Amino acid sequence: LLDVQSTLRVGGRLRRTLTRLGGETPLLADIAARIEPCEGLAEEIDRCISDQGEVVDHASPKLARIRREMRSAHDRLQDKLNRIIADPRYTDYLQESLITQRSGRYVIPVKAEARGRIQGIVHDSSASGATLFIEPVSVVEMANRWRQLQIEEQREVERILAELSAGVADRAEELAWTVEALAELDLALAKARYANVLDATEPAVLSFKEEMSSRHPAVALDLRQARHPLLDPETVVPIDVHLGEDHFAL
Picture (cartoon, rainbow, N blue to C red):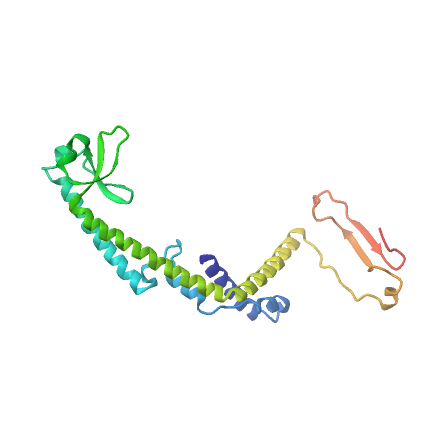
């Protein structure tokens, strides 16, 4: 979606610039005229998604509410766990005074021999078996609420992304025209830059002589001091090549 947004913004700038310079660059302006602005699509993607690719809080009122509640629920959960590990009654039963996560649930490391001293759900154990990672029973409902909000958040994010994707699908044909026009402009600019690097001379393409067409199978060619573009410009030997009415092949 960010790629689509970037493509539309670049396309819009090129269309405006080349339209303004249409008197100087009419052929490029004609290509740029095929770029479709897709009004509103880039702005909607920009409104909903950050530069880091995250769906932002204000993408929808529902998402903003869910995330506010998530932060509040998480803070309450953390506060409760911090009070447990700081409680002198439990200090001797803890392997370490820290909060960690197992399977997406917040747990505290309890010595295996103190298993019954802190009531809760065992989510994991250490490799040695000396430590059990327990979710205290007093925080289970808090954790459940936080997890429920996470699920709601994910569903709302998916809904927003699906809606934006549907918007892109609706404009798929116009986006294809834009990408094709941008590719043509990119090629034109690449050729121009390459010509500057080579200090190249623009060929003069002249009308084919009518009297020649009846008996000449190709076209007349007149290259003067031509150099192969892939050879070293310091050592390449320029040549003249002339194929006229009496020379059909070389």
